Image 1: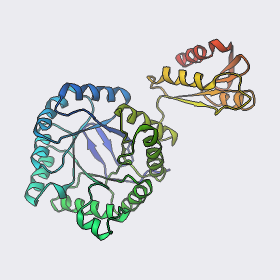
Image 2 (image 1 turned 135 degrees about the vertical axis):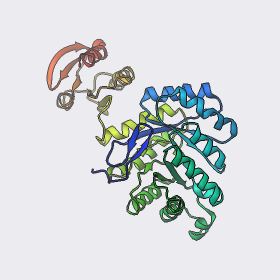
Image 3 (image 1 turned 90 degrees about the horizontal axis):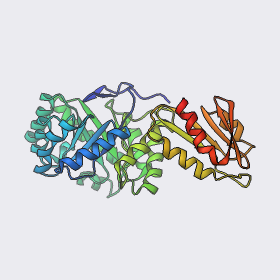
Length: 350
């Protein structure tokens, strides 16, 4: 699973492309004009491990808030601008670390040039963001109203050319669709045509129960092909959950080692203890830990000892008792009521 070679781009202190680690991004759900609420949410995202955060800038009050927000946070800030080029210029002057625009919907060439000049003056990149809800009318018409991978790529290349014609090449690209197969096909096609870093995700993935699955399938398929330099899991809900899921996707593909990975058996008729409850308690109590550890919670004597022994720390459950493993060796035998605490103690010793 080799990452594709892409252009190196700096977003504040986070460097993407050129085989740098994949960066996790999210977006605030607050009114950007509410500085206090927005900063609180960004601080929560920072604590969850978010590396880049984006804020919507739909009005003048939001544009005015960016400078103060930037002062109070610790990760790169991206301003999401549609239509009003003056907001983009103001965002650049306010110290944001990246602009997210569609050059084609900013207006005439003079307005686009003014935005590019501001980005160049402040040495910040621009993300060209194309999604299935923002395709140009002529491209929709060309493909008879259907959202296609070819149409998304055509739109992206059209917008990229606008920037390149103005001698601007610090570009990041995203071409998200709500359709997982269309998104995968579009990114595969685009990755063969450009060397700019790609921000990946499934747009409008939905509520967590559905969106986590759709995002994991789409993002995971792309990452497995070496495609993707930054990613966002777009969920209808708490953005902190977006960050948690993003890291689980990266961990599942073994692209990063971070935090506790709790694996547990699916359970069956052999199980004599409440494995689901034990695994859930351990997961909830270790979410704050950043050190990479694999913890296995297994429910019976058939596969339990082998699977638990393969982890850094493991619990193999029997009837009323459990064996605690560390690096393949049994270190303790504990009654059922002490299983969770025993595992937590071993994690603390690691």
